[in-house]
Length: 72
Image (cartoon, rainbow, N blue to C red):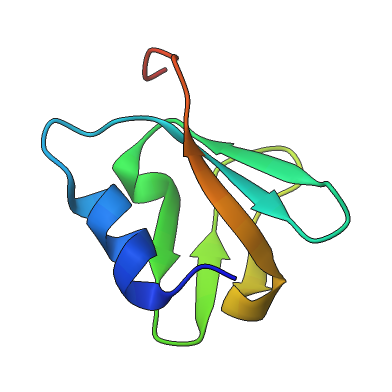
């Protein structure tokens, strides 16, 4: 499980580095812009795609990985 502090550290890095959120069950979300998601203490709001917006509980996040992608 990923903590709020870990996720905020990734999102707050300057310059922003694109990342991939991996959920339990294998679903993935590529975050290419820092304003694509908002991290809160217990959940994350994701917006800006065809299957978005939606809420994610932090307990559902298995890992966060840096990816080699250019912001759109």
